[in-house]
Length: 110
Image (tube, helix red, strand yellow):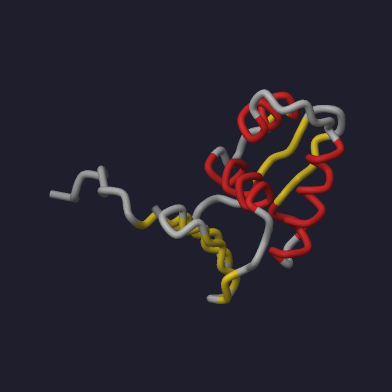
């Protein structure tokens, strides 16, 4: 599936993120951070949820989230895509332009 947010495309099948068609190189955890936020766009993802979903049973601190957010913003070139919610978590604020790779479940107009 490909999620598209303006000039940003997240290709989950290829584990790639493209900005204006150029593939970004990043650590797997940064990719996972961006993808998780984008898949849950429009809602605040708590720090605890991110740590649980992305790091599982590993014992890491919340500082890794701030690091991922910083790197993600720099790579994406649009700091406005990821919002920090103080003392709570993060949110992907852009609405998807389109989803490719999933069946269209909308009904056709009569």
